[in-house]
Amino acid sequence: MQTINITLNGKVTAVAPEITILEAARQQGIDLPTLCHHPDQRVKANCRICVVEIEGVKNLVPSCSTRVTAGMNITTNSPRVRETVRTILELIFADHPQECLTCIRNGNCELRQIAAKFGVRDIQGEKRKHSFSQDFSTPSLVRNPDKCIKCGRCAEACHYIQNVGILYSHDRSTEISISPEYGKQLADVACVLCGQCALVCPVGAIHERDDTDRVWEALADPQKHVVVQVAPAVRVSLAEEFGFPSGEIATGKLVSALRSLGFDRVFDTDFSADLTIMEEGHELLDRIANGGVLPMITSCSPGWIKYMEHYYPELIPHLSTCKSPQQMFGALAKTYYAQTSGLEAKDIIVVSVMPCTAKKFEAERPEMNASGSQDVDIVLTTRELGRMLQHEGIDFRMLPEAEFDSPLGISTGAAAIFGATGGVMEAALRTVYEVVTGRTLTDLNFTAVRGMVGVKKASVDLAGTEVKAGIAHGLANAKKILEMIKAGQADYTFIEVMCCPGGCIGGGGQPYGTTNEIRARRIEALYQVDENMPLRKSHENPAVQELYQDFLLEPLGELSHRLLHTQYCNRS
Image 1 (cartoon, helix red, strand yellow):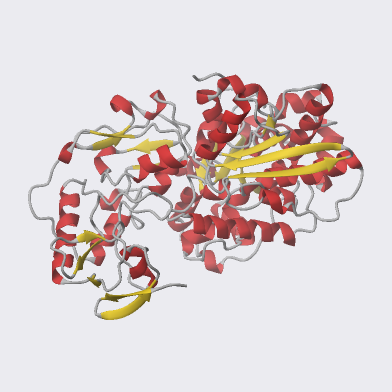
Image 2 (image 1 turned 90 degrees about the horizontal axis):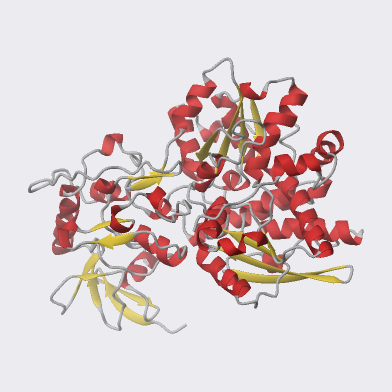
């Protein structure tokens, strides 16, 4: 590989040409501070925290947007650089609420971490006071404009990664702000509540609505039977909250941790993911056989569903009518589980631990009450569960391995990969192939649907009928497929869409610091979970088989339709 020589802090170093100074420094173990910069976003260079000094150049330059050239002499730690960065930090803090001790980001705020690194202890000059009101208008996200540092990460994620574009920069200079148009609240615009803005925000300006107190209250009520379900993506991300490397598989410790908190039963959303494949797979076959609307599109991702309702309501007939695994579980917990356990539905509290902020909105949709009351009562993100465990003083590293409770904790490897882009499609193809052909798959790994490519394709021969599959993750990629459908150019039978980049493993409620590199590690871990499972096909789940035998009777049956299927609304 071609290289050029630069001098970095007095040391001659060979680097690849055309990389940025920031990249070159980090390759040499020099961690330059950044606030507006994010590795998965375009370069913005508006915070100037990453400035460096270049010999022969009058002004300091931002390292994130300046590319190296041969012979360049760079200093990252000169007195001038340090003083400039300290001044910038002090100006940001002068315009920032001094609420660090009570902020939801206390302990993992990027601004505070950089300030500590540069020894910022006192704020010079007059402190500004704002009077922006907080936005509590949705069940998923909270906006606190007073804490916004105008880095632009949230708007970048909203416009270019998700292609939703409801966050804008307003005004100029010191009056600049980032918010929905005309100062509206999130509930008043076509926000899909995916939380990608919260995931990349470096401070506490936008975050998930915290529902941990509601869970503590439920756990303390002796009259309530509190059960918890855990999404597949959480088992490969929660450990990051306790210093483990990204992609650490922590299923057993996760179960043990939830038991330590006092939940009466610890169940697995993977159980209802297997159930989803049974219902969704049979729905696909029914549409193929009886002239139903094709291509059929998956419906597991609530941010994706809300996006369709807002922006493409005319394509709603393409959506599968299946509820998400979270909602299927809630409906069954308050009917099937209540019946088999001798409990009253009104006494059961269903808590979900999800990688997703949109799941909070989904749980409160008025149609999600097939059990006679709200099917899922409380949704926590991965981050909220992490805070609960830290609050309780639980040492995650010391926890023993434990198993999920039966029967709603029994699952297969097909369900585990639901958390990765392409996973729902692969799980469905494993089952649909064997149901239609009556033959056993010799290779369960549909590798064509895997990976971080934005739009993927695959096909499978079902006894002479070719099923062409499309897979997209991130709404900007989903939009490409939807436009193809509108134009009559989508040669697909079945399409999987995940709202968030990488799928649920990259959800808006996952640990802060999530990048595409970390997403890839989590995906790899989920496939390892799948490989390690004794059963890897949803239709072979014995608990699901028993559920149909004793309660639902058959896929797409009358009771299945009432409990496990739903309808959507036009939000345009």
